[in-house]
Length: 239
View (tube, one colour):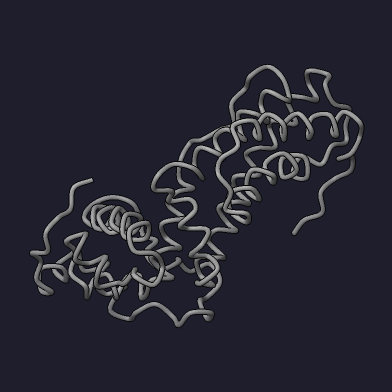
């Protein structure tokens, strides 16, 4: 990504379509008092100038976070890196928490699905390898966002939304295993997937240990063996 120099005036940023300007003029409700069903900071109807501004801003957040950490991430720095006027960034996202939350919400707007390798253990291994890659790449935006979630309540809520949605997509791994006859229902898909991926997260996020190339396979194998032994029977309770 190339940096875009700041060159917008406040007047030019405010000169967008009248509906968008009127909506922003009222300002978002205070943190913690958002009306049910209202949009989160930075979330907008797709398309047009609004979408381009959002893309510019969100593309600036990640690099600044990994370069400077949570304490070095500021709305002014994001505005300067993105080339979007600071008044617009403050008006739409309010603060760093709003920016981080929108980055995480945007990350969930993809078509990712867990790989189908033909076996439960293979599917879990593929998941674990993806997790390990995200946590060990340099720089790791995933690690930076997890760390930021301990500092920002809004980012923590967004990270939970992201994981909830990702785990829901991963339930197909168990559905396929049942159809193949590898597992007998009922199986708590969430518990099985968490059991497989948890050692990788624990190793990198909590222990801050060097990557273990054998861990993804070991954790996948252990979770698959436990599942076949009936360790994850029963329906998952709703959070």
